[in-house]
Length: 509
Image 1 (cartoon, rainbow, N blue to C red):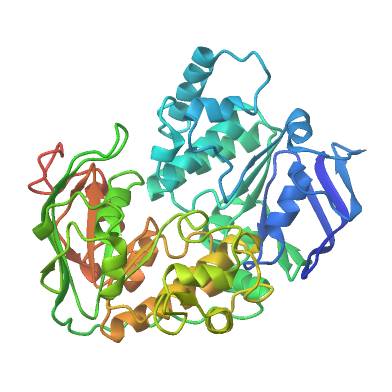
Image 2: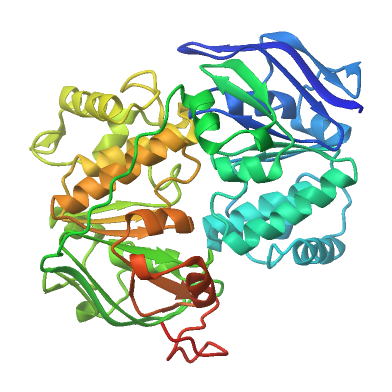
């Protein structure tokens, strides 16, 4: 079998960390090769070196048997290397087609490119509207743009960094069919994921990294999830213990919420009706772009167009109240987009803590108490085991999983009465995911009302007391999580529940 890519003793140092320490990696033609490791293990840095985004300090790269200097992403694409980043590299103010055109030769006809995008998206089951502006897309839809952009180049090597983190089970199955077809045609695939079941089902080989070094190479098809977890984090992940308990009084209630589109590509909300009680986790499932983003915007106070009494916080009408007012009354929010909304990339972790902590401890008489902010940030880093160079580290310097742990920790430290959280474990390793889920359960047990929007059905089944599903801006009836299953939730994702006028059939829960 031909060796498509070989890395020899790749090393990359940053001021506070050695991201890659003498890494060897070999990928064969037509092989789906996983790179597995906990957050901060050096996986993303290694992929950026292969794609030409980052240059190694030392080491050698061989492409199709020839030593090669991959000095830029443009050169990587010329060689036949495509990459889908975990943190998307898209311009918000451009359309899908315009974003994809940036990586193609000059003179590419936009109308012809639109047709190619639509055809490729349809072929691979990744629905896209080429003329939509990126700022109107959900995280899941943006990921589809990245995947289609990479596939349009007809790559010999495709690098996928957490490609299924916000895809539905049906879309994941379709993507796997696509990847297996690409591999059968000779395309090599480097697959980064924290989902051990995916790696065992899809990949032919697996390189495990820990602390910037390669700690093992295996065939994941011959491993168990437990053995892969031990190779990755050195131990079994802590168990998440769910205990059923009676819920308390209603903390957040939504009554007949209807909201027109904020822009032409938004999802209109209609007939949204639910409540969350103290000591309860309500899970919200649904295909990306089904109205979850709009719902979170109106609940958090980012969108104040709702009728005042359509949203009640402990019985108080808050539909027109600001996000700051709601935070002051005990509401906390973790958005799905970490960099840009959850955190300011250029600011330090200590400065970012001020986005949600502006009480007398960190801000007094209008003045920021920097020492207190740093102390709070350091406590979050320690408690949630965030790999960072201290409170002064810029948010952008953290891996995706570590930044997520920090943002969850920042909100948990506020001891909220109501917590809204989107995609809590997106791109997070198994150990960190278990910790985040345990913290959400701890909040719930302490009396917090928690709403979790997630496209990880297993996650929702694991931690939710009740489940609802969103489809085309409408919400299903609630069902106890213990009574739900993949088949039922999958049908509801298509709008097929009894009483839904947009569904094509009726399903009895």
